[in-house]
Image 1 (spheres, helix red, strand yellow):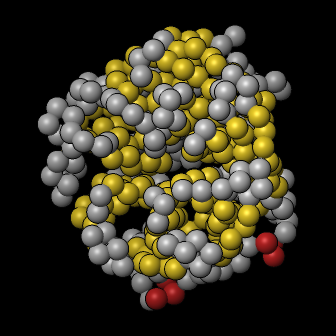
Image 2: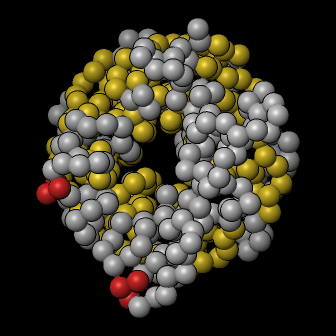
Length: 376
């Protein structure tokens, strides 16, 4: 049975499991984890009665599990997923969704190389900040695309950790470690905050967007065995400080370990990020022993309002964390959904909010919950 504290279920959508959820103008976009399901579009003007408007498919061998929308432009990723349909190619699908019942493909931007594709990304209505693979590089890198004309995306710039560009003659120093992998970049102002999996996070100066430059970086691995999933800058000041929430993902552990958690960094002096606190769900780690993957942290909401930050916490569902005092974050609400039929436990994969304060929680296996809370 579902468990809740300071939250209430508004409605449930029985859809295929997914990787990312986004809401724009009361239209809900859900990108699914497994082919042939691509992206589903719902009208949530009445959140108690979502209406399916359109469903896109993806060829076997690929998945399209991430989506972002702004100003009637929808971007979805294409990434290699097991075997099949190699000729489809990885990259991004760029669509006009002014009529969400009839998405219109404007362009398919392709990565350089036959395998891989784009993993996660963000989009601000002009630029897309993406994590593609590229021929000649080891692992995913950072790339910025200009979508001023969405039908003709322009590659603006790239950035990578020195050593990734092996085709350019760079020496690759990580043979006994996990290869570098940009997970996804997030922009705030003229900075790009980039998570880099088992290589930590980086802060880039993009005041000259055609030439990203490194300001600083930090890595908690291998002392902490979980990969860095998201580096999320918090708008404004908290207790007079500039803060960044950094979530580790509870997968791909370097060695057996207790569940992953979220860090909070003081980036007031961005040249030297300082960890100031952590948050873990109470009771999840009673004795510090290793637990199975996807028990702990996954992803904070990249769109949120105020000082309560929603998290998708894998087997623990939705967690609402008050970060008004970033030195002592505290949980003020949660929603633990029903376990999807045919599965052993919940696997909450992504979460977002809309301007009405509604929360959308997506399970990577099956289903999406629309939730309201009295603490937001």
